[in-house]
Image 1 (cartoon, rainbow, N blue to C red):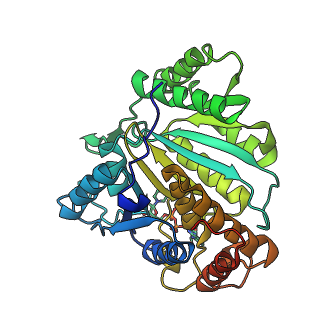
Image 2: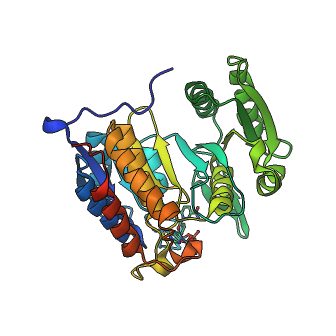
Length: 352
Ligand code: NAI
């Protein structure tokens, strides 16, 4: 198997250039926090910031963002709002993932110490097909009042997502993979996804493989989530199950998600919300985007800086008990970020 998303070569002085797409809603303020924390942590990263206009498909900024990520190899992003109701304007987020062939999305749903949650000690990895399925954006009105929406499942993409999952499990010591599907109803599309994962599973006898229907999966997740280890699924199920799991461990403000292809990687908050209603109020939880920035630092090989920021976040939440309102606390976003910076400045081990 090819190595996924090769690490870009650092510039002179060991610094990396990274494309930053703040997006809409709370994206810009969360990116400011990332930049502030990176400054105090001395993280060797220079950001190329690009604002994409979500209302236009003919956006120079979108093309520039693609060129920039192709040049830098790595990006960090907030959600770009799809504002138009017009079917002609398609999601810039989906277009970006398709253009860069970021075929897999990884959400590591791990309980965050100190965060009040419905379920404790969760440690599940969702591996989601990221470029086709229900997100094919192929809809049309065949006759008046009848709309058809195509769900595209290809053997090649099902194959590489399943391979990615089994290689991931092998590399990280995970024991079991569950394919989530609705092959009892969508016999051809989900059937192909399921059969492909079963075929790949035979090449990895040391890893247990089973499958579960998406409906049952949602019920099992809220009642008995500890039975799951790694899960693979098509695009829309991935989004729904990711949101269920984020809800179980504390909501949209905590987890990060990683998008990988053979050449590029993009890091972002796990649920991909815009949080427009809470923008500019200094209450958005900064953890999800900071977690995404830690993922990005680890991907680039800046492990010490990643650990420094992660430890500061853990101390802020589990020792100082500072939480934003989404987690039942009363701290503002900037109070949390300031505390994280204080911990970074007080750290015994500095990476520089
Ligand atoms: P939303 O942006 O309204 O967020 C859902 C809830 O999570 C809200 O209560 C929001 O305040 C809260 N939230 C999100 N991030 C937070 C943070 N950092 N700190 C504290 N609270 C936070 O989500 P909605 O309505 O699902 O989507 C809004 C936009 O996002 C739409 O344009 C949608 O297309 C896009 N989007 C949403 C995805 C999802 O998985 N929910 C996936 C992809 C796009």
